[in-house]
Image (cartoon, rainbow, N blue to C red; front, side, top):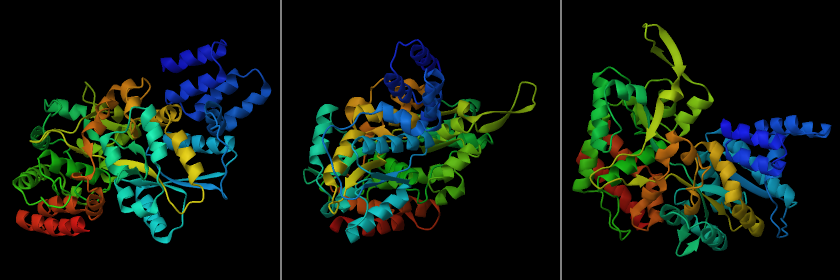
Length: 483
């Protein structure tokens, strides 16, 4: 890419320092290993060739600055973080954390694991009063674990004052009774991933409404092309994101703004279920059992034409050079790059407009920790622009900062890659379970029970009538919102 070539030329000609070169290259999404190779090739001294063999550590180490305040810990600072679907993002994040530890003379143990595992780890830590100092938690879990978490208001107030404040959904998730009990970390923004060639074949343009999306799904089936497919199974990210968004955008909700009155038994909910039934009629039956990996696999295998997802389908297709089969002008079967015919569009609007679910992660410091000050210092550091940019960029849109003031930074991926532009405004229409109330503790409890997802799935799968599905959901929701 031209920008990287220009930076390399500037380094070779002595017009840029090695430190600035590393920072700018990381911001373009270049891997630490690639940066290390360039540094080795440009280095005048033989010893510099060592950079190539330990680039993942040394490249980022040179790019980051130590926190000046002296810190100490008891034992070591331990962290459990969510794994991104882009390996290069995980690599950069781990190195940034470890470098902070080295510069502050603090041993840091970083473990990057799945979102599902993190919830179990967090619940166990809350129950036993022992575990990692920092755990990334999802959705409104800060409300569930409120009594077990350290107050991090000083960190959030500082970051918010410097970077334009946090998005509404981030406050919904992390602020409990006026106090910040976890530090907002990132959204995993969602859009609809779709096959541009299949849409072109049926003459479809990007749909603006859910109804238009159904019509496209029907046209694809009628044309004998791979169908659209959206998760109706227990997919923690994709399933909740899709089902809550359909519910809310039809003007329905599971609770009133008072946070107590269950409102799932409504005309709007029935309209949402009726729509979902029609949509399911043009989807594969196995969407009833989709988990978070199912739609990715199906899309990458060219078995479906559209699904909801983060940027990970397109990113995986690009990184892995995934192919699809087609025919050339002479009718001969050929293979081409799937990512070239993969694009995204924003979630459609319903009768109530575009109202979307926020897949969200935050960083919690548990009150049992003996290292609260060091944990706060590290979380402040990780969320500063200098560390956010080199971490966000290589994740290719999978992570979206929670601070409003960095969205328009020139090197953010949605500002440099047109196919990622639909993710840019995701946070502005997104909410957590419990919306439109502020009772996110009960909303998170209902979300953990799969109430909304199972309501839709039971009807689509023929296991319950509309009335019975709503009655079941209502009973479960009343349990949650009375808790």
